[in-house]
Amino acid sequence: MSSSSTSPEFSKDIVIVGAGIIGLSTAYYLSRNHDENINSITLVDRSGCIAPAASGKAGGFLALDWNDYSSVGPLTRRSFQLHADLAEELDGEKIQYRRLTCSSISVAETSRKKPNGRKLQGVEWADDNNTIDAESELQPGNIVGIRPLGDEDTIAQVHPKKLCDAMWKAIESNKNIETNLVEGTVKEKAEYDSSGKLIGAKLDDGTIINAGTILFSCGPWTEHGNCMVGVKYHSAIIPTPRVLSQSVFFDGYGDPEVYPRPDSTAYCCGFPDPPVRVTEFPGKEEVRDEKIEEIVNSVRNASGGINGALGTEPELKQSCYLPTTPDNLPLMGEIRDQKGCFIASGHGCWGILMGPATGEAMASLMTTGASSKYVKMESFRPERFENKPLW
Image 1 (cartoon, rainbow, N blue to C red):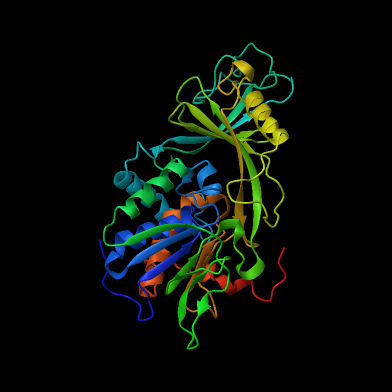
Image 2 (image 1 turned 60 degrees about the horizontal axis):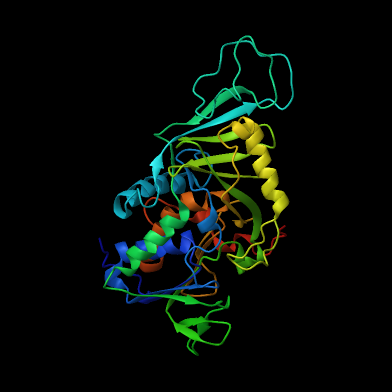
């Protein structure tokens, strides 16, 4: 589906800085909805890879209505639907998209008197290691309560790296558009000619990539406004004895989060670091053994010990930074005093969820001068932190 209406200032050569979920989603909807107006899309990333950082290491948890009472509510709802559409377009099995349930599960950390009531029902993780019956004393790791947080109508998941790779493959398959993936760092200030016309993005080595439209989607490495920080999360991918379909936010043992995947693994995370200005290289973030051990011990204790659902050793250990702004809302829109330059970043823990609707809205804004009909960008103005004390 293509659009023939364009902004009078729109250029047909586009540079997108950052090859994560936001940049890729924007490129995807540019190629899908506006390809008649575009000659080329060039992705520039410091790593030279697709989704090297959080977009390749996140859990991929999707919730329809958890942001309903915030400014990102409409963005979230639209994006939840787009994820379902992407599963149809890109083959849901290949990107590990599926619907599932989610619950908050409370577990005991000490021995104490048993609660009243029968054995808990509806806990997929429950087995003889961490459930109780009416005759038993409560032991550490026993489940003491469950609160449903969503069902298959409102909860889904996707494998972020597989999604990003599939989107880039689809973008490259559009024969109407020249596509390039370039390794490099783009300077924050774009290059303009003497008349003030944007001519391209300048790399650190002095190379200029011709473009009349530039999107900065650099995640926690975003420089604009001097307002972006990163919150570092570690995660462990742990094999499970069976395919599970209940995401869990544990209450107890440090409150870890567990997102099971359809390949008999579970993405386990928690215990974030304080926000910092990010200096680590994308995709080469340090993985601290003590953090992984904390996560593994936490989910193991909360799920029945070494014989429970998460009792085995992790097959993958990783870390990444979640891009965060002072008001926990993303930056989205055209950059003031930089004509033809746009920004989309700072989606925090919901970057994977909000990526598609952000990309759809930014693609529309960049080509037509207006956001998509589903997303109003007033609350996300990039200049809202100008002349204000920040972190």
